[in-house]
Image (cartoon, rainbow over all chains, first blue to last red; front, top):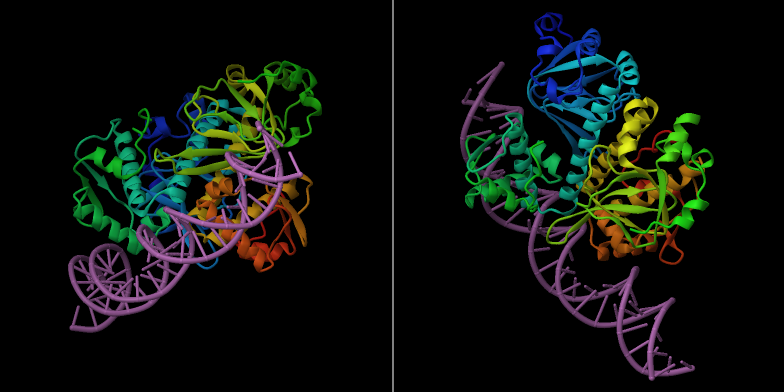
Length: 249
Length: 249
DNA sequence: CGCATGCTTGATTTGGCTCAACGCATGTGG
DNA sequence: CCACATGCGTTGAGCCAAATCAAGCATGCG
């Protein structure tokens, strides 16, 4: 695995980390940060690279940095399902388990902020703040996974696409603490195939539904990877769930 | 909500609780158990009853007792997806949130072992053992949800049915600490409709696939709710994933 | 230029859904 | 005891959304 020493030197300390307030270290203070800092190292990956293979040994856990990656699961015959999206500040790895359960692939260049697993597990035991933040994050992920179950089990192809766009829009908006409204632009850091793997569709169906949404004016395309949504509410309607997405989280 | 005082009196203290070693209180000792005991009360529900509605206020969390229940999520037009199965010793509710996110329906008679939420949250903060056990359980649920994503997104109707049977068989076997093998019997505490809601199918398709599996000798039916599997490996093959289910968990 | 990669589009097939009838228990009331 | 209703499950016929198979197009790159 790449471990770029020069890179480490250029990384910022936790104290001024821009995503700290949402990450696992959200509620930490001076001493705890120092402790974390000591077990920290960085890894860098390029777009398309596999970060971990399912079944691999993993002796670190990590906080997710810029950019995006996907967790995937496979059947032997090759059918693939993405089971999670890793977005900035998300947590990777599982304390108490040394085998990766899923394959993680970077979809854009990224830097991973890693903590050696053993010391981190120890820290977790005698530091309730970190432990409770991790619990909270895990519960959020569980909720997200359950929403995804509804999508995979009961939504049409068209609704699935719209839902994915809504989710990405909300995620982007949350970073700048605003609610998506009116005319918005969404970055789509995924190939059609990755979208298909996420939505439980084929890439052809994804392509067709994108074209259909464009034809009907629900979205506009600027290149393949940038989507303009003239009316966010219209998109939400197409996604099937009429909810407003709850409070800004 | 029903709160049967007479019943409470007949409940056992945590110390001799038969499912304690798998539940949230797994690693607790004397004092902690006493504390838990103090915030504990029981509720009883009958088969078919709704335990909580999505959006309801919930001022308790609970440990799951005998029997089975399902968490469901709905779209406004009525499409329903089950997003979790609650089995003995599972945990219900989310510390730090007072709204239920899902509707919980009992599929058989059950007794719920509830803890008042506020004191429980407090206990969580100053008791790392309980907190870490809860984290572990949540991570397990997340893994289960992700396996379910693969099932919903990529498996055929036949594979879905077989997978459900495999899961139920493994759960039953785990209770008696054995691995399912050879000829086994599975209790199916679910209507065809509940199965459909779980698998993202219609009840007709569930029925047809059950008939097909029977016709081909993969399963035998004893009444509607009891399934005999002559060869467990055959069933696993039909389920699509060839894995052996990992270590006895 | 030639070739690879990612995407679109079209023609065809098919698995699972919809709608509808029917079977079979169990319960209820006359 | 029979007539009838009700709740679950099964089965069949037809249809449609999405998968599959198959070109073809745009972009980028050695």
